[in-house]
Length: 325
Image (tube, rainbow, N blue to C red; front, side, top):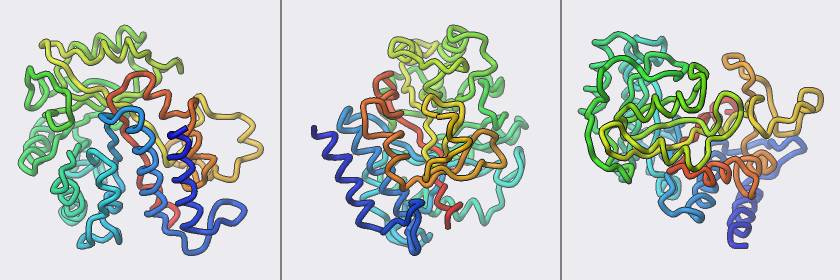
C-alpha cells in the first residue's frame, strides 16, 4: 500500500505542475523538471524496496542545477535522489569516436558533473576511443578529475575490450558500495555471446569493480537472481556491483512491454522513431502511462530489475528533454 501511495503522490506532483492536452503535452511545460520528477519517482520506488539500491542517470547533466545553467544553484532534491551521474563522450567521442571532445563541450559538461561530485555523487564516464594512447589518456584524465571511467572501443558496447590487459586501477577489494568502485565495464549488448553461460564466464573472468549490463540476454529472456549473483564474482576473488541498464526516454520495440498494435495505433505517449537507432522510439516521458511501464507496479520494468537482484539501475536517454525543448 505504501508503494502505491508513493507512486500516486508522484502522479499528483506531475499533474499539478502542468495541464496536459489530449496528447500529454502542453504549452510552457518544463521538460527538464518533468524528467527530474520521473527520476525522483523511480528512485523513491526502488529505494523503498531496497534502501541500498543505486540510481544513476546517464547524460542530461543540465538537470543537476535548478535552472539548467552552468552557474545555477544545485537541484538538491534531484541530487539527493541519485547516487551518481553517468556521462558519455566527456574526453573522447563527442563528435566522432576516437577523437578528443572539444574543450568547450568538455568544460561545459564538467561544470555540471563537478557540482554532483561535490554533492557526494560518483561520476562514471564512458569515453569512446580505440587507439591505445587515447584510451590511456582517457583513463588518466578522468582519474585526475576524480571520475571513474571506461574507455569503450566499440560504441555498441558489445564486448570486453582487449586493451588494456587489466582494468584501470584494478584491485582485489570486495566492492559493496559505489564509493568503493575504481573501474567499471559497460557491456549492455550481449549479441556476440553464444550463450548466457559464455557471457557469464566472460564477465567473471574479468576484474572490473562494477558491471553495467542489460536485464535480458539476446534471446529476450531475463537473467535470474542466481545468475546476477554469479556475475558479482571477480576473477581475483573480489566482489563487484552489478547494475542494470534501463532506457526511460525512449521505448524499444524489442522489449517485453512492446505491443505490435502500436505500429498501427500509437498510444498518446509514443512518438517518432529515433533515426539513429532503429527500433527506438521517442516517448512523452511525463505521461503516466509510460511511467507506469517503467515503475509503479509489480509488473513494471523496474520491479523486474529489483526481482533479478541487481544492485542498481543505470538510466539512459535522460537527455530526452532536449528533443522536446
